[in-house]
Image (cartoon, rainbow, N blue to C red; front, top):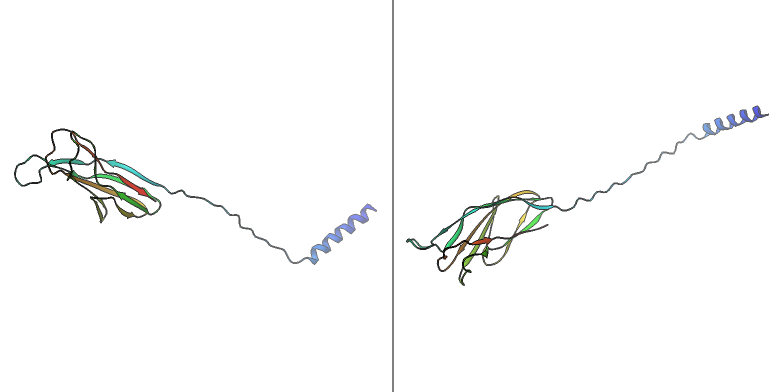
Length: 159
């Protein structure tokens, strides 16, 4: 009798397979998500050099400190960014800057140039690597007394 059930089961299975001629194909998409964080970094800062000069044509005591070689900095960004440039400011010196002192920063990126004198200025930067050249000029209405003067220019990048 068990032989009878085995044969009947085999025939039933074979007939079921013969009648279902349509296969049910299915597909599924498996999503993968990655978040790339915004990265904006200053890199490879090379200090520039400055000299003192007199703004007049005759031999005078120096009243100007200005770049003779620009400082350079590389900016790397994976998103468009805005660069804010400040005028120079005195960090330390033998004497404070008197009223009437003028401050100017020049920043060049490729063919773009901005000048910050009385206020901060901004410039737009593209995605990728940008090589910035930074120059500065400080002119006092009176000569600089002997001593060491340290000025700084602040660059701020906002993605």
